[in-house]
Image (cartoon, rainbow, N blue to C red; front, side, top):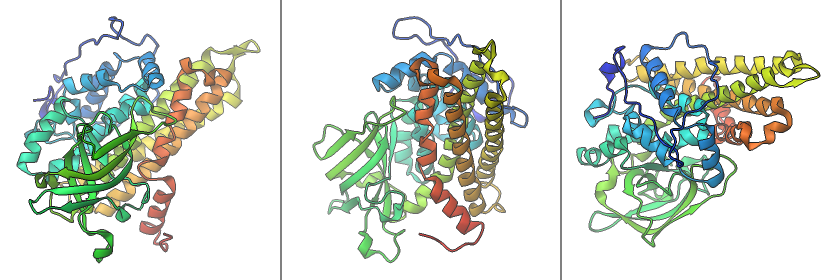
Length: 438
């Protein structure tokens, strides 16, 4: 069982286990830099505030130097993953019956924001991202045997998960996926095809794989014939190849191309009904939009905090540079953008959670809110990170000031899991009733 449960989260007596972790040198790692709260906290629920407080305490054991080192060495932050797993945080949005906390996406979004805001950035958030959102379809549609085998082990940190959807020839056109899972006479499947930009495939034990069980030219609609599987990633099997992609930011977490060549998977790995995979993964897509929006917010607030601190302390022409409106006003503008995006993000998360029990909330409304939140948070984070580098001037280019790392990472929420342009297409079509452009 995790160290916190839904009922306890609503009580002031809830205190997760927090113990100091040691760095590689053997010393307890606590950040000594002063933290100035920028985000207005009014309006959050008690459980959201408790999540923020407890996760902040865990993150304080992993200072900026930890993330600088792991970024430069391209080393997975396994100690960080283990720390969150030890206190049950990987099960924050999973049902209590499966060993999770039974909390909502509203609390999970706060957790992801807090992680990114601590200085861990997108890399820290992405190290557990799939374990939080990709497990949602599995928890809802998995068989009792699948759930018993995977969910408790994911929550404990024994198993790590990646999500295998994107393909090089399809990009954002998910319905045109080509990876084929061909059913065999014994009920198993043989998988052939290629996935790309698969986060954590170097360290994951399981993959939630979306593949065609009926070829595209054999279905009436492109949304048909896709199936979702929970498969073992046996990197020692010659029929499976995982190739790491060298990338711009978030280097502590690997991104990969994954090649399948007649890779065997058991029939029991199918989640839900064959051919219903696309409908099943839609269950997790809006949740991911909220989580990513939270991560973008955290990154933006972290960058803004660094910039404001530097502007207060850096003296040029015998006065702090923050005294100049050319420095102060852009930072104030960024703050307001982040605050506006924050309200959009947590509105979307509340709507997502409420829609599970309130039948009057249409899923289209949830989709509009979640996509809007992701767009606004990503844009605000980009503005904050860019302004942070410019405020630091030449030192913004230096690794030790962290803002260059934030800037490299802030492009992730603008691009993934869906681009800005596709969100604008979605809003144009669904809200403004304009003709579809693609």
